[in-house]
Image (tube, rainbow over all chains, first blue to last red; front, side, top):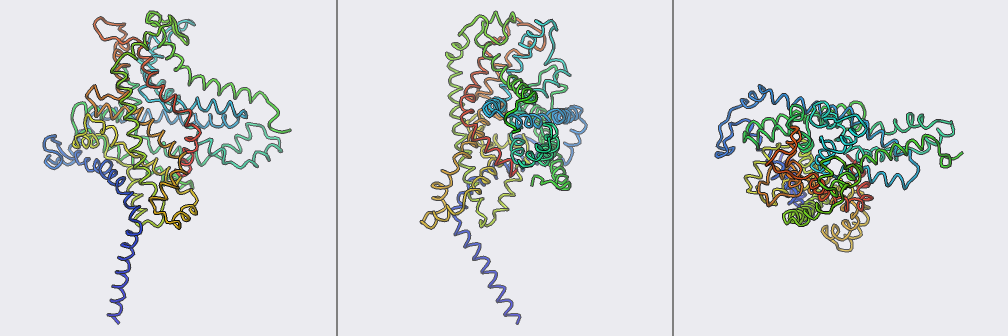
Length: 316
Length: 290
């Protein structure tokens, strides 16, 4: 009996092995296709993850990771005692929070207004124009902002000609914050409407027809049909953005910042650049980056969990 | 009482509002154009707003006769094309096999890929990698580290998966292997998607600035955005310190800055409207699947 069972197990094993071999053979072309992309991902995405070991070392550029001295959490302890680190962390959170409060509703409002337009031609042309800033680099935008809003720029020319006088748009700190957020909205609002427009299109037309028969006003239809219709999209995007609270792009604060507002414009990404590539302190910069990645990931996982809990789809 | 006929107050105010927002998107360009065609005296005395004052072509003559500038443009175009080709090649190679449900290890591979969207080693380890691979100050440092985006891969995979399976089946009955199916059937049907993703990759590379700032220190290898950044910030610090043109400092005229901005923007302005109808669909396909 035992022998039979053993034999049977053996058979299954062989079969299983065969089926793997079989599928490898059958799909060998597909695996071959995957070879390069996977090699790419391993080298350029996973190898840097190995590099985070630098955060736990007194990294010596000549010795490399294998030769450098291990120091445990000393680097982190050191960073957490730095005021400049907290400043970068706070700035990152503040700028992201401002973006969220001011920037998040903007594309929703614009998308609803766009969807209410009945002239197809007009709609197409304006959409083309509205998407455009999304395709400009922050260097280009930064250059435009500088030329428009510096002391000799058009904004100040106009302001002085109507008698208001000059304003320090870029060198006064509160003004700079407002500019940072406003330019962010300018750059992304049109592009952001695409996803909401898509979900407005998905709303059942009959609902609007029924509301028409009931004599509903435009505003009531928006309030009772359109907004509830795009609610799932809004919630997902909101949660996603909250989940990305700690991550911030490099280009926008770097290009828009200047020496007079560095107290506000120095964020984690520019901080890492400065201490890492600027001053060559790789261990510290890696540790800050690792802190950002790990806390950011926790944020994102938590956000996704909340999304699922309140009955929405979640990101994964 | 149909919805189409009556044009009321709400319609008009919406159109006016959207027009106003669109104009805000265009004003910076108009200002750049008028700056670039204006004389320096007019700019310094702050007479320029939305139309050129003291019309001159000098600025563009300066740029177009600047060998370095033309070289940078050519170099950046080549860089963008090579980058886009490499990215699309990798993306297609990865997306197609992953649409096959029967592929063993498919979900594992997907997890390995998607993980990198949410966690990365960060800036410094990537910098060290590029350094250790001896790619500093080469074109490859601007191509390989960012080649293939997993997000775009998922968009393409979603699109591939939406193609009718019967087409592939009939092709395989006719004796086509997987590679033949991909090249002869799937790719031709996916041209809109491929065009969209190519545009995204190309714009990313054209606009890319951060990696060039990190990896390229040799002036001759500067791509457009880095060169543009140098031109724009050449004497910006002076302005923020309220100093109007201290003697001896290298001053780039505002008109030249504006013209350089336009110079780097025009290629995008030319390509982008032509591809618009594709990319909106492309974004939606991606957005729905997330």
